[in-house]
Length: 511
Image (tube, rainbow, N blue to C red; front, side):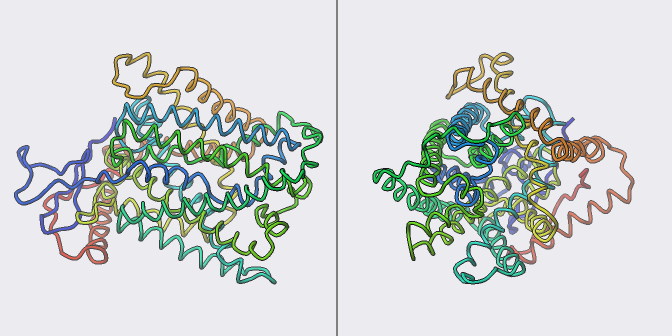
C-alpha cells in the first residue's frame, strides 16, 4: 500500500510548488490561471551526464588508499585483476541500469526500480537506510577527505588539527548544499569543471608512470602473483573495496526525468564514462607499482602523495589540491543525484511531502537538498564514520543486486515492454549474482559489521508499518506532524523565497 501524496497547492505569487509526477495540482483538469507547470527541467545534456557519472565515481579512494584491494588479495597481479574485474562488473551493472532507465523513465534509481518490481516495502527500506545513514555518512566521509587535503599544503611540517579539518569540511558541505539548492545549471557546470580536474589528476599520475615503464622500471611486476595467497575471507572484502571505488555509475538514473533525450544519452553517458574510469583506474594502479613496491603501498596513508613526492618534486604539492577538488566533485554529484531520490520517494508517499516541493524560479527540489545538511553535520561530528559505512556497504549492493534482478523479472513478466536499449540477459544475471554472492560472503568473512548493517536495515520494516501503513495514529502525532510541516514551510519562505505564499490545503502528514 502506497499512500498517494496530497500535495499542498500554493498561490501563484509563491515560490514553492507541490509536484505530483512532474505536474502541478490541477483545478478541474486545468492549470491555475497565469500559472505554468512547475517541473524539474531537462538540463542534463550528454556532457553533463558524463560529468555526473565520472565526477561521482572518482573520489578520494583511487588517490589515497587502493591498498584495501592489495591487502585482501595478497599480490600485485591479483590486485590488478580485481581492479579490472570490478570495472567490467560495474560496466555490466551500468548497462543494466541503462536498460532500466530507458524503460522506466522515472527518476529515483534503485528506489524506483525496486518499487516498480518488488513493491513498496523493500523500496521504503531502501530509502529509509539511504536517508538516515548511508548518504549522510558517505557525504561526511568524502567531505572529511576534502577538508584534510585542502589543508594539506598549509600544514606540510606538522599534523593538521582535527578541529580545523572538521570546520573546513562543514564549510565545504554547506557550499555544496547551497549550490544544489540555487541552480541546476551551475551545479552541473561546476561538476563538468571538477570532472576535468579529476581526469587531470589521474593523468598527472599515469603519464609519469608510463614514462617509468618506458625506462624499464618493471621490477615490481616481476613475480606479480607471488606473495600471500588470496583467501576466501579476503576476496569478498577486496571486491568490496574495488566496487566501492567504482560506485557512482548509477547516479545518472537518479535524475532520469532531467536528462535530455534519455533513450540516447543515458546509455551513451554510461558507456563512455565507464570506459574512461576503468582504463584510468587500472593504469593509475599500474603507475603506482612502477615506483612503489607492494610493501610500501601498504604502509602509505596517501598513495598518490607518496608517488608524486618521489617523481614530481615540488609539483607534488599540487596533488593534494587535485585530490580535494576530486572529493568536492563527488560531494556535489552525490548530493545532486540523491536529493532526487528523496524527492521521488516523497512524491510516492514514502517520505514527508514537503520533500517533493520544487522552487518555482530555480526549479530545484530545495527541501530534498537541504534535508541532507543537518543529517550530514550530525554524522560529521559523531563517531567512527568508516565503521558505519562498513556496516552498511552490504545494504547498497544488496539493493542494487535486487534492482538488476528486477530487470530479469521484467523481461519475463512484461516481454512487450518498450525497451529502447536492451542488454543481453547474461549481463544482468551475472551482475546480480555477483552482488548477492558478495553480500552472502561478507556475512561469512565479516559477520559482526555485516550483521549490524543487516539489523540497521531491518529497522525499516517496523518504520514502514508505523509511518506508512498505520492509519489510526494518535491525534497528538498527527497534530505534531502538521505543525512541523507548517514550520518547515515558514522556514523556507522566510529564508529562501522572496514573496509570501498562502497554502490553500494543508493535509496532516502520515509520515
